[in-house]
Image (cartoon, rainbow, N blue to C red; front, side, top):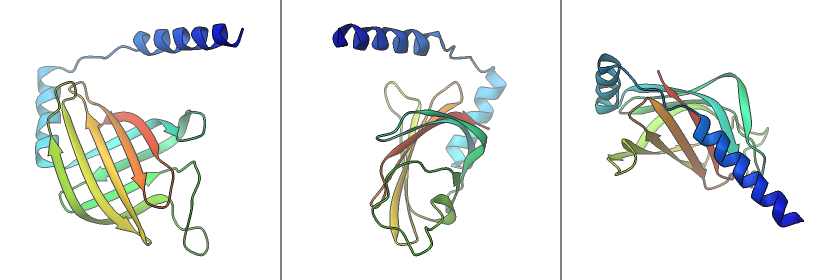
Length: 156
């Protein structure tokens, strides 16, 4: 009986994700997106997150990450387990800091992948952006002191 529930859950999830259109960009929009990505200066807006060990959730407010070649500005919520935080709780994923390391590469299935390494409040973060040719973006955030969390959204 439990197996049937899991099979139906997988079928429903697959139908839900395949039903989401990919939406094509015009040539001008794609060129503008490519220019932003090549200059490493872009803002990504997020409307959905998937925390580790917690259910996925729709985000209701304006959450975003702005990247420049030397600075990362993160305005994101955090849901998950924290192992060690500064006194008072810290600022979570809401901060502006200097980029320690920035690397990018083109993937076979993905359009571009950026890995940004930063430090804030005694913690080290890796922000991995997967930017697709339709303007969609997935952001994976890993940390030394916090559980993994993933965000989905759009490049603006």
